[in-house]
Amino acid sequence: MYFIDSLFGFAIGLALGLLGGGGSILTVPVLVYVVGQTPQAAVVASLMIVGMNSAMGAFFHRLHGTLNWRVALLFGGSGMGTAYLAAGLSAAVSPNLLMIFFALLMLAVAGLMLGQKRRPTTKPALRG
Image (tube, rainbow, N blue to C red; front, side):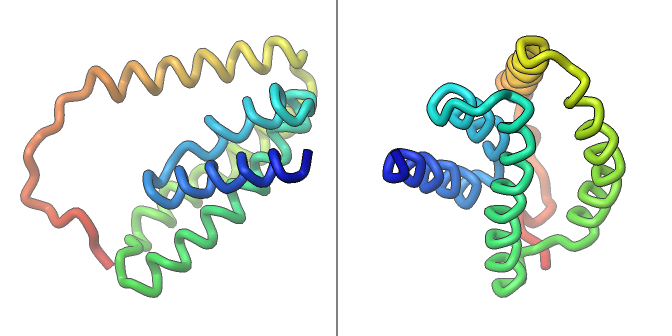
């Protein structure tokens, strides 16, 4: 079982490193439906898993001068308090309802991504 879990961990790390996203979107369903954790336990574990993977990716980009500190601190800093409050709230929500909310969030994000038109920009893709 550890081998299968490691393969999924590898795939999630690959998605995070290549695409910069997919952390909890991939991690929570794998932990619930493959590993067998409760949704609450999967959410808690995904925070740590995604955090470790993200830290490694950020370290790489920092070394290569492609980390935009202003954006990272703005989004990360503003989300920290909300994440703390939401972590407490998730313990009070039933596992089924938690997974329904999670699925609805994934669908909403997918809809936004598919519906967005890419606008040309003159800004550089990577800034240090």
